[in-house]
Image (tube, rainbow, N blue to C red; front, side, top):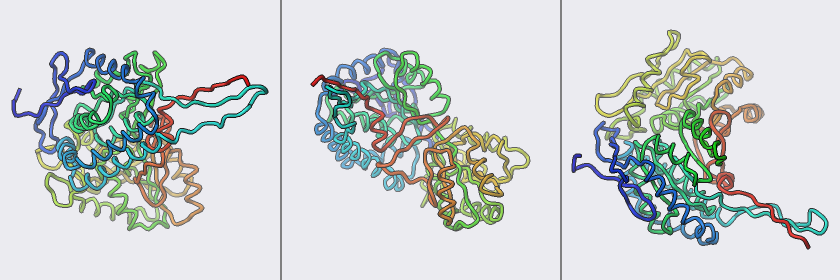
Length: 476
């Protein structure tokens, strides 16, 4: 092994550890394509140790008061804020994200989300106690579910780790979290920060690949499995968890329709959609990458969007860059493959190519002339590619918008309030934005329908997902 490589380690029962058998994986800087670190390739012994640590810690953490859990989360948020520059260093090296944007758009949000769930810890809700049967009083207890096995994705490693652990810990659960094998560094750093605050074993991190995640989900200890990832991965997790009836929380991606009507402010729509489509290299399950435009303004919209794409900056060290590289070589190949396989009726209006020969950069791309059953319309690209279709009326717009397997997020662009309300009802997606696309707040739920999964992140609904309800009845 190159001694100059950074060495990442698992975090189990309050200690940093190598994999029990010494196996490692290479971690690649996506901006250069070069290996810069190694991480443990965890297997049965490591997963067993982490699960046992979480199980042993659960009774004490479960019995801690909501006020104690709130205080712990607030201390964690303060510590992350104090070490923000260090977190940014690690996250941007791991992902290639532009530092300035990560500092303004991600770090403050994840700290705010931890503080939100700190407050949620003290806001458990249930039916009021009462006499629902003569001579009997009933009330509801809301309790933690137990040990949670959590798998986070590579597109927002730090923030998705927060979305996993913050509600789980706030509710009184203990956690074993696996980051993506391509972006483990910031989660390992988070483990040390949390470990300075939490009792041993309450929060554990095991690094590894898909097989590591599979071992976690199949393990008998966890009461719940939570994953953010692909539909394929979600189906595997749901099938595996069904064998012993684990709870499952799935956020599996999307293919957000962006419906632009003829009365919309086209200039603002183009500007906002370009940002919402290309931010984080389009590696966002809510990205504005599938635009449906009314036929009367279609050509004007496409020309303006192609111009916006040409003006969007990406690249290592590029001034005012909106996004960095794709996450890994496989993802670069996947995105390029969609463009290479475009049908003859499709037109590449901008981009459609790799940038440079170092790292995994891909140009901001616009594709028009597409049909509803085209591969690139039906499947998630997860890259800086925006497709545009032309629709004739509201009925067709709804049909095409809903005519896919994903149902996470969507947006409508119109000045007609009644139309906006009709569309918000008709669109079969977990989120509908009106005249905007992609903002999220801690107080509102994030989660989809159909093959986008089930369960909610953020909000009180996300908190509730990490609790169970017990009815207690007593004779008077």
